[in-house]
Length: 297
Image 1 (cartoon, rainbow, N blue to C red):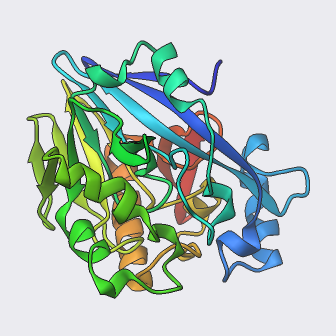
Image 2: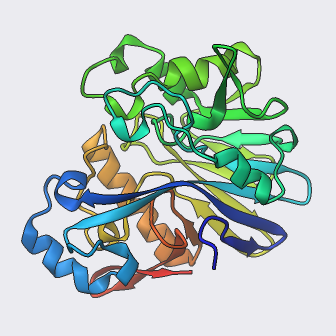
């Protein structure tokens, strides 16, 4: 199976993973600052072999886009980190040169044919390919698309409230990956309470990881999949949902949103489409031993 282009069917909808990059050797002690070595040892036996690096205390993380083909539209959910972005505070995303557009085109997606781009939130690794550098200017990568942003994300990251040294997940993103879209007249906004969009999509408020974070459900026939954004970063967190990542900005809200969505996945059987899990990045949440379990699709 080519993990750069893993596909799933949800009713009449085809969903394809297109990977931008796979990060390696992210220490669990960095990703989950409150996780102890004993926590890691306790969870490790419940993880798949590909979920841990050989050291046993570090993980791979995927950064990718979900390409959604409905009978009427082509939609991208999150756009990775982008090329040529100035991210000196975050070297793993600084001045990248990735063959992302070639990978999209290999799945049959021409940038001009994309109808919509949905951003679950506006952190550095979710909205970078909204724009590309052309003659020294940031221009929309998908020129015929409507870009759909949570309005609370736009308001916050455009304001001085977010411009602080601790806010590495979003530093510079608004200026080079969001504002050019707004100025081009291509932006639509989802209110903080979420809601239906294009009939088959539902934006679900899952604030906490970021101020206006949204998960996005797609329903076709009697099947449902949910693009969960960053409510979780890795299967380790399915087993320890009490742990926030180093990138979560509003910890109490993040924990509440995570529990609520894990319950929803476990109760409904909806396909979980993650934005950072390695491997296929998709699977199912179940109830297990008083907590939750994870199985890859």
